[in-house]
Length: 238
Image 1 (cartoon, rainbow, N blue to C red):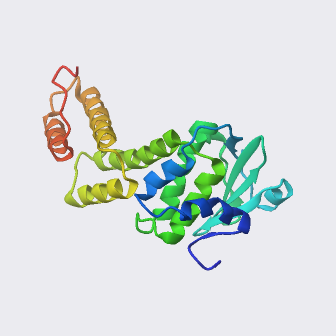
Image 2 (image 1 turned 120 degrees about the horizontal axis):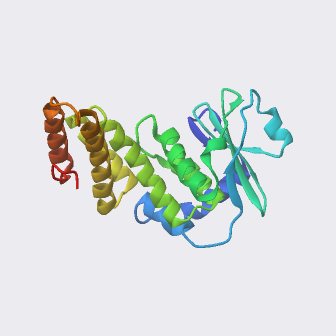
């Protein structure tokens, strides 16, 4: 088990994914929303604050290894009042001080777990599903947090794609693959495309507002808008 790239590290962790294994119909993310989308009182969720050169302190503080993803380990300390997450890599503990707590932390954490789990091929296989379900179940994420985390993942990709002013066929193919993998709602896709391109448009307008050589950049924006099916704002920017 422990030579797997992705694995749960205890029976305690395994308990959180058992419920998810009972449901085999529908898409993975729809299952997740259905499983963990109920409104309920839950412990406060936050990340470990501070950077450590050893995980020994985590053990002393009551953290237990929950799962491994490549050379990264997720440690969890949970009781009725609080669920605290720590992430270590190469024996060193990440500082999660700026990750916020509750909704802000949970959406970022789910998005980060997706990146960690799928960075080899952007696909969630059976072992990865088990780890993902267990993590989301343990932090007791709700449906809005799961949906927003998916959108964060896709938004990060779209923002990266448009930042150089060119959208390639390979990038379009990757975007389509990620959309399918994340099961993102078509309305959310359109909203994220609009935001990414209009943000880029605003940067270009600001850069060239006192210059006359921004025409090539505007042509790039028009082409990206066509490829991403985004209606551009008029020349006044409103």
